[in-house]
Length: 247
Ligand SMILES: [Zn+2]
Image (cartoon, rainbow, N blue to C red; front, side, top):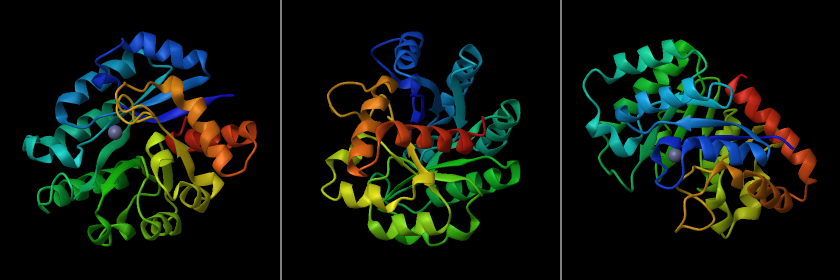
């Protein structure tokens, strides 16, 4: 079976080197990972991984809503430069988070700026949204053709909106701790499901760093919740990821 981890932060591991993490992932069939940025300081690091491990690391450049206040005034210009240098790069992660950051600005304008860049440069958009249901109402009709809500673990109503707008839904181990996990994972059409670890952060054990080698175990858990054959499910999700990241 082949897998693509559609969301992790290689630059954030405290235990383990990128080479070892990617080698052990590849021994489990995880052939690619999307290495996602959170803040401007990540962009050079993510670019370095994308150049060093060109066959396995797909870069994503963006500004996470937790860190929007730290962004320099020229962030939009710098982001555009990274995206032009890396034509395969996605945008993210970006979005809205009312738990960590209750203020509506600058997170709304920074999210809006990244949506506009995704439309202009035709790049997939990786969205982080937490307790942002009302704010999201302003954005549904302007999202780019390809977008994903990553680490989905939210409400049914928001999930319905993502699906009705043609978005992808990505699950990591956090969904397995949700009391409604069975219903939520079964709501998503098979051709819109993606899988991720959000490594090093959201693994099955909160006290240790999760690596992309965990992806086959996650796939087995989600396939079981959907009562699907693991090999068929893994193949579909792998193709979904390829379609999403255009490789
Ligand atoms: Zn993340």
